[in-house]
Image (cartoon, rainbow, N blue to C red):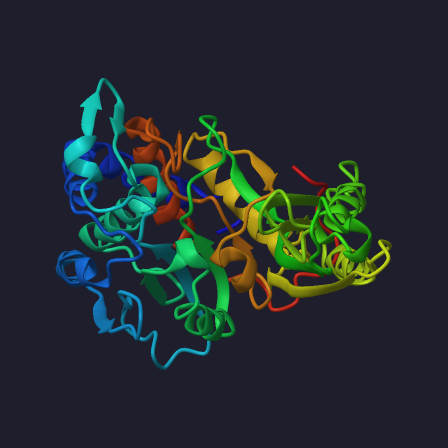
Length: 404
């Protein structure tokens, strides 16, 4: 499609929008069913029935499917349109079925629909996104609209714990993708799409000291707690809000008891950085911290587990096509940067990626988690229309518009 769109293009998008609106009640019922089916990350057995349901619906939409069992997780579900297995390029849809909510939460906090809102555990993060994908693909099939690029779908069960088993496959698929749509929740009730994400690191700082009786011979000891207090101040001083680098000591463990000079102390540190260069710089700075309290030793373990999703030329160009598609649908879409991380961080290292492309609402991982149903219909139409866009050029160049 061109940026301005032709009369034929406009009629196609109007059909997609009308069809999405005609499925409004079905979308609501489907999402409600998915939310009622609990799928905590730590309960792999819960994913069999859940993925079986999605398998049937994706097959009904004309896709081939494969269920891959996990080693220690619930595995994943993949689906693809005709020609995807032989194609040089595909367009990739990434989502996850796992939630942070333990079994029994649905009984304690049953999902409910109030006006235009569906509230329930896991509704926003991210069963709304899964619903969006199923109906976008269903609508294209019902309307007989064939995307110019084959579509490959991957739904995982381990994103909430960093995608340990699904990440290699996501990276592999992104390597042959022309573009990637990650169906994480949009940013805030306004529904902003995430066009950049920070790198996320986790470090463990351990201080070793020497135990001694705090009352009889404190001078014989070396306090690991004292040293860790000094280190915490130094770590927090590394935060530079203006540059986007943040360092937070969120968990501390120290000492044996109050009358013993602490022989060991440990801090768990969360680090965020907007670019690869800033991530490398802050990691070097953290690893360079040395003990200053006599008799103590300091070690640092860990690193960055998710690279940053940066505003590369390819990512910018993909975002511009999303904006233009939204305009042709009569939707106003905005982009934003996010401090969180997702599978989009990894996919974006290999293909143009947009994230936060899923459901709109608020309260992810909180008791008031909800999805705006009217805006979910908009997102169904937006995904369906974006899948019909022409492939991005292999060399997007450097001439792109400014940040959103």
